[in-house]
Image (tube, rainbow over all chains, first blue to last red; front, side, top):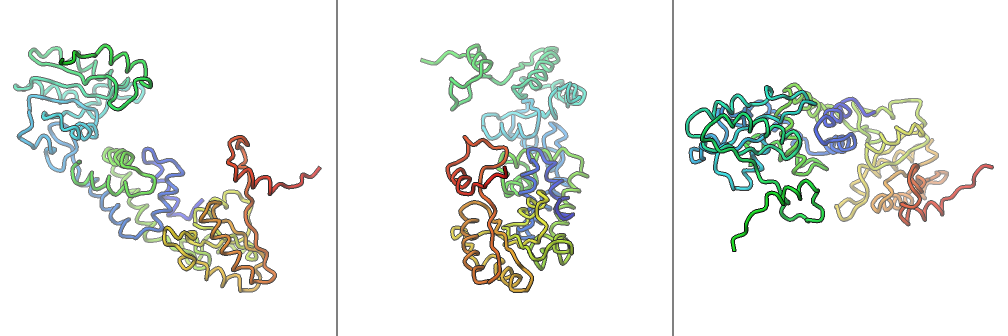
Amino acid sequence: MYEGPVQELIDELGRLPGVGPKSAQRIGFHLLTVDPADIDRLVTALRRVKDEVKFCTVCGNVAEGELCKVCGDQRRDAGLICVVEESKDVAAIERTREFRGRYHVLGGAISPIDGIGPDQLRIAELLKRIAEPGVSEVILATDPNLEGEATATYLVRLLRTFPDLTVTRLASGLPVGGDLEYADEVTLGRAFSGRRAVDA
Amino acid sequence: MYEGPVQELIDELGRLPGVGPKSAQRIGFHLLTVDPADIDRLVTALRRVKDEVKFCTVCGNVAEGELCKVCGDQRRDAGLICVVEESKDVAAIERTREFRGRYHVLGGAISPIDGIGPDQLRIAELLKRIAEPGVSEVILATDPNLEGEATATYLVRLLRTFPDLTVTRLASGLPVGGDLEYADEVTLGRAFSGRRAVDA
């Protein structure tokens, strides 16, 4: 439809997640009119991510060197491992500033439809870390959806074999700031079954 | 929040139109996990747009050489000039296959809030084209919004000075496939005032 290079860029942009044909076209034409230095900055950022970003050899989180920021920080409690699906989940939990332990990034969740079984995830690496002395608790923080729950259930079964290891799952319940009226039944049911005594 | 290069990429992506912080994060993490060849293709597409795309010296449309595809096509009627705001409007009209004339891309619309007056648009170039013999009709196809209407009104006043030139504006009315019930009052009003006799 468009002159060669413009269409090519629109096609490439359209491959990005959440970018439909209309957005790709809008971004493509926007880039035609910006300062060339803006495109250079984007190109540099893309190249740096491709060339410089590695994955932490311990936990699988994104890292600039051998270790990610969390694993490289000696003040973080190595006895507490929070298991998540992706690096972006690490970032989400770090934003809460509630957690002072370490992470383990699985690289996804069990999803037979997408051909992802336990062998495609970094589960063997997790078991190796837990087998070392000093790990007291594993917090399962996979997504609260079908795949995440399946993965958590699978991991619970494996982790049961470790004596003295506490395995916990993030609480399900009403999102803070939400309306009870608009909560779905499953969430509301979980909020009931997970209710807690209030300090008087 | 993230390791340097990842955050840098997310920041750059967040500057694109229609890409909010969440989408930027999603795209950024997606690019961490794709085949490096995919990033190379995107980088190449960006570089080519920056280096190879020029603007047609006649109409201002995007072009790979001196002239855009339309101006380079001798079969297109040079007596008919359709005035649009942006190159993407050319593409939208070309998709209809209804128009066999040439275009003139203004490079935007009059918008005092954004500091865009007539001098920032390619209006002088338009007048120069019309002053040459052979142009019989100018179709004003600016957007049907405040800025586009203001631009069209401004152009009508200028073009009145050309004798023997027909100036037309795209029809306003109900969008095909839409519901009359859901049309806004302005659109419905335009559809009434622009009603046409039906061939019996």
